[in-house]
Image (cartoon, rainbow, N blue to C red; front, top):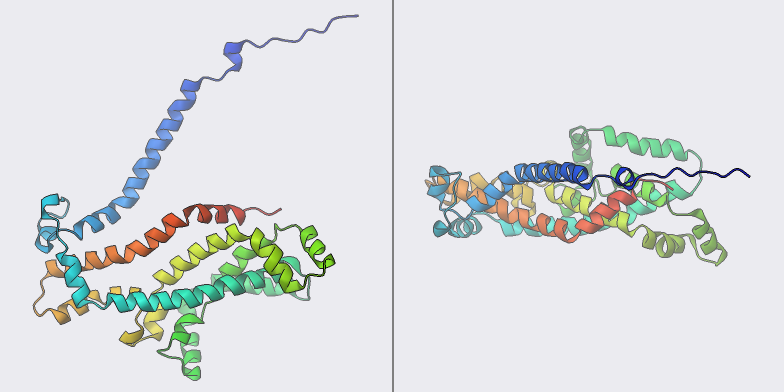
Amino acid sequence: MSSIRVPVVSADVAEPSTGRRARPAIGSHLFLVMLTLAFLSPVIWAVLSAFKPAAEIIRNPLTFDPSTFTLSNFTGMFADVPIASGFLNTAIVLIFKGSITLFCAPLAAYAFAKYDFPLKNLLFGTVLVTLMLPTIVLIIPLLLEMKELGWVNTYQALILPGSVDAFAIFWMRQVIASVPDELLDAARVDGCGEFGIFWRVVVPIIRPGLAGLAVLTVMNIYNDFVWPVVIASSDRLATLQVVLSTLAQNITGNKIGADYATITGELLAASAVALVPLLVIFIVLQKHFINGILAGSVKG
């Protein structure tokens, strides 16, 4: 019997060179750090400048002296601008509109993902087509509709339009499509109703996708400007973004002869205050947001 010779691979050939791998990794990390600093530098400058004296912001905009640290921009801004009212209105819209989105969008997505009914593909295609419509195209029809309902300058007009948008349905459909049908069939065999299957079986599985949708929904509602400024002309219903857009007028109206430096300082202070909630939400839900993106990126 002839013997079989197994080729022996030299250890120095088989083992990859760790030095060659480390260099590209270090280079890519340095590039990412530089890119991050480039994106964050305007935000860092705005936050630091908010704690500088107003005159110093104009005189030396690119420097920060800790000895000149002051809260005068913040105290003046809170006295001149109704930013607390803007936060309250935004919170009200965020709670109710966000709740409607996170409840109704998964239900609609569940029907598109797990049920067969006539014209399902046509209906879902119609939903996707609405993603291509610019927001500006929908403003006039929605405004006329709100006028007929008598909802102009009301919370209903701020909350209900766009509560269940096409993107939320598409996002959740992609997530729910990965739920095994065998789990749903087993729940039906056990006597669980259709809504019970959704609430007790589907929702616990799609929590990462829901968390990702929640972060995106909060950001969209928090930063929404066009629709609130059109439908709510009353200062009583002005959301945070509308208040921020009228900061200069409010400051000059409350301070006769306010100079450019004072206006700039209070604008930066208001921007820094408005940044805090989103920053906290993203830091707290960062892990869930990333998991949600991954949950909605693949099927099966």
